[in-house]
Amino acid sequence: MRLEFAIIAALATVANAGADTPEFEKMDVPRHVYDGGWEHFVGGGVAVFDCNGDSLPELFLAGGSNRSQLFINTSKEQIAFQAKTPEDLSLAGVSGTYPLDVDSDGVMDLAILRVGPDLLLRGHHDCQFSPFTELGFQSEDHWTTGFSATWESGQTLPTLAFGTYVDRFDPEGPFESCGPTLLYRPEGDLYHEPLHLEPGYCSLSILFSDWARTGRADLRISNDRHYYVRGGHEQLWAMEPEPRQYSEDEGWLPFSIWGMGIASRDLTGDGFPEVYLTSMGDQKLQIFDPVTNGPTWRDTTYDKGTTAHRPHLGGDGRPSTGWHAQFGDVNNDGRDDIFVAKGNVEQMPDAALNDPNNLLLQNSDGQFIEAAADAGAASMAKSRGAALADLNNDGKLDLVVVNRGSELEVSQNTSPGGDWLLLDVAQDQSNRAAIGGFIEVITSQGGQTRELTVGGGHAGGIAGFHHFGLGKEDKAKVRMIWPDGAKSEWREYPSNQIIRIRR
Image 1 (cartoon, rainbow, N blue to C red):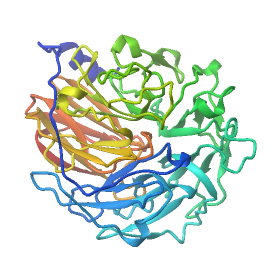
Image 2 (spheres, helix red, strand yellow):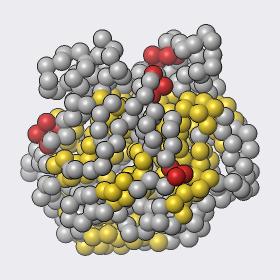
Image 3 (tube, rainbow, N blue to C red):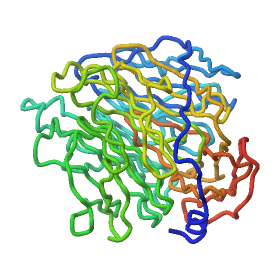
Image 4 (cartoon, rainbow, N blue to C red):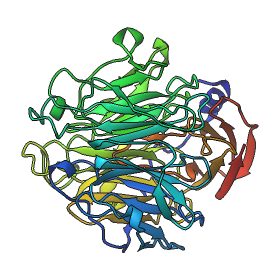
């Protein structure tokens, strides 16, 4: 633990270990449904990003067999959207989508995952898009369900990773016929044929993370044992010149789950990220163990109360099925909470059919309590992708949930809440959004460390302002650690505003 954080953590005291329950109000938005046959039992992601420069995030929604849609944000005090999809975004076969600024021009682009060839689309002003034609990116016809990106040292273009699922063309499939993870490393200003990271074990979520704080992001892959059946496990690839999997000798603890989503956040204050993994049957919260000097995470799911392994209401006692997971401070008390989107794959008899979403609130003692029903966030639909994001810039995290076979749900956080900051981070060079960097925020309550990443979740991600809940603090100290390790000066800001941090 860094010294400044250790001192503040030791001095901070909180009289009440409880967490205030937020209130989510479902809003009337245009209709959107993610649907389709077995190739769309998984997926169903949403990209949250600003594409018209008004600082309000739009929604780009995967549709499966239905057309994908773009919803333009017209929110004021109340959240509102207008469906306005340009031709290049009205696509069939989309399973997921992630926003990132590929060419570092200050306008967000899109990586679009499909059952079919994946796409990289260049963003233009006023929410128009067109294919990148000059980057050399080519995709084969495959079933893509995971994505992540990072900027490796010395590169102006991002390294892209696409996680593929079942090989649809394998006549011996679908079991034990998993595709590889495809790694596109740029050479100058071009992409060439991807490197196949094998074996592949049917990944449903992947995430580049600088877990060791060395300046290099490695690739975590969460895999679905339903299709790899045996011999597979969760993976962590060291992004060396020739990528390789970490071994048990180095501290990696292999295990097998029905892996569907990855969330990453420092919960302990030591500056290293913990992970939350969704699955069928249980979800896993794993705390990073720095003692081994290797990639070791210890399971603390039961100790922290984050199993979310069975429905918490509705009376269906069969195991739950988790999809998208995300950390976020939904009540602005200065502690990260966890949202989990839930839903039966389709009609799996051994899993709960009535499977409400979870909202796990973190108490000051580090324990989590279930609050989705009281908060109005316990949808019974077959949820897939989701996003906790401030949709109207009022300092409170709102909720977007994509459902399979039923309508999209957008809910506004109407809680009184605590204090907050929204941080807009950019550098005037390649990797404009400073992916791979870290934000540090300190108040009298303690310290928060946030790694800036692209990927994880289930089939969708967020780009834009970084939200920090502050509790009842009227100010906070902030600094940026840029991807190359350079550190900005600590600066103190009054709470409850948008802060723009420029390198």
